[in-house]
View 1: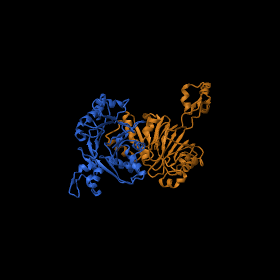
View 2: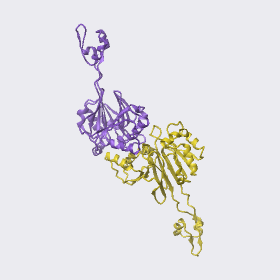
View 3: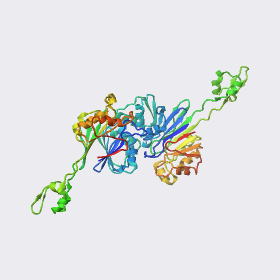
View 4: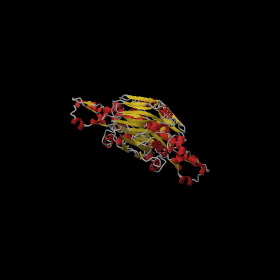
Amino acid sequence: MKLHILGCYAATPRTLTNPTAQILEIKNHMFLIDCGEGTQVQLRKSKVKFSRIKHIFISHLHGDHFFGLPGLISTFRLLGRDSEMHVYGPKGIKEAITLLLKLGDAWTNFPLVFHELTAKETEVIYEDDSVSVETIPLNHRVYTNGFLFKEKLGERKLNIEATENHKIDRSEYQNIKNGKDITLDNGQVIANFELSFDPPKPKSYAYCSDTAYKPEIIPQIKDADVLYHESTFLDSEEHLSGKTKHSTAKEAATIAKDADIGTLILGHYSTRYKSIELFKEEAQTIFDNVELADDGKVFEF
Amino acid sequence: MKLHILGCYAATPRTLTNPTAQILEIKNHMFLIDCGEGTQVQLRKSKVKFSRIKHIFISHLHGDHFFGLPGLISTFRLLGRDSEMHVYGPKGIKEAITLLLKLGDAWTNFPLVFHELTAKETEVIYEDDSVSVETIPLNHRVYTNGFLFKEKLGERKLNIEATENHKIDRSEYQNIKNGKDITLDNGQVIANFELSFDPPKPKSYAYCSDTAYKPEIIPQIKDADVLYHESTFLDSEEHLSGKTKHSTAKEAATIAKDADIGTLILGHYSTRYKSIELFKEEAQTIFDNVELADDGKVFEF
């Protein structure tokens, strides 16, 4: 898994900071998560190929999370895209994007499929052989979902040495990868674990932005390898985080600790603070493994 | 008059080029003309104070001319604006912006006044004591207006030396500025031209983007000091300019020549060309005084 942070600052774009957008590379997918104004320029800087993006997940309809979407969709058209594009986001997103394209008499020449979300409970919104995506209902001023991206358990890895020692025919290899025991011509049964290795542990990534402190999400994101959790404020501005339904670094760290997360990545910083290091320092008083998102940064897990 | 080019390239924003937006400083106004994605970042770079912008003119509803507007309006709110903001643009702009704000539950805390345009003939859309703005109906794939900004003739300038020689009382100064002759106590009439100088010649700026070659605009923009005219293509791509209803550099120069323009500024370049100097070279085969717009450039006239 690889996470490209395209933008991770709260509110509006500034000369040197961008609003929220990120690309999650997972099992050969390039998922775009949120799409603030300027995302297409950030994408160009990141060298991610536009054509590899087929699924866009929008957490909520505040401008700093989706005002880059109409422009990005127009650009896909200019680039001659013809493959399907799927957009997952709150109800209303289809009307907004459709209206903007219609006003410019600019229909897409590729299928643009909207999956509008309204559920208050978690739901699986995307699934294939290798990965699933489910919503994480959050608590913000408007209807908002985080997203939990989970790899599926892959095939077992063949122990080539063992299969050759037992002179097992290649036609059985797929069965072994699928976890089956093998019966030799002499009737001897070889247990699968002698012929294969465990597949890599599937990884998971939880994206939670924007939200007030919401411990109810903990069971769902329990043991996730990586949690991106917004920390708009520091504890000193807790009064503002309550009012605006954002979180502090301390609250994000508390979620990470209570959910036994592997790595916590902080982001969505208010631009009032002199240094984002302050967020890390505060979070680390609660939880050790904290990383700071920053525009252009790439994390590999 | 001062013209800040915030962005002047065709189509979508790229790492180093921005779609259309410019600020015209005229008679103490800061008029924003068009608002492509990324305009607010370009505005920040230009150091233009956001609060000084009170009128926004949108030529047409293609994304590269207005996808920056919802974000800019949201930013005005975040900056605590409370004074009126007037937006002039094609019918539909109000619905689009209102819908986007509504979806984010983000109403403005300042009066946002839309002036929707539908007329096919020119009309005066803004006027005060010092300046007027009229539409220039253009020929593009969607309903499009250019804008003609005209200073009004100012007051005459007082000839202080002459008024003092004639011992004219200060209470007459405004009358002199207004062009009146003055009768002295002894009955002698002093002609106004002896007591004052002509005011500076009022300046005018014509903005024409996007449009196919449209010579019908020439009478309206005749003798304008400055014409910004789109030149998406060079003459070698004339087949494309016809199809997409854009202009070539040669066509822009022909308009400038036939309208006796002072200075022609070219812009809205297709990004297919290696150097924008090519546009200047082509235009100068027709018309001498050609300048090239470029992002961040400021022209003073």
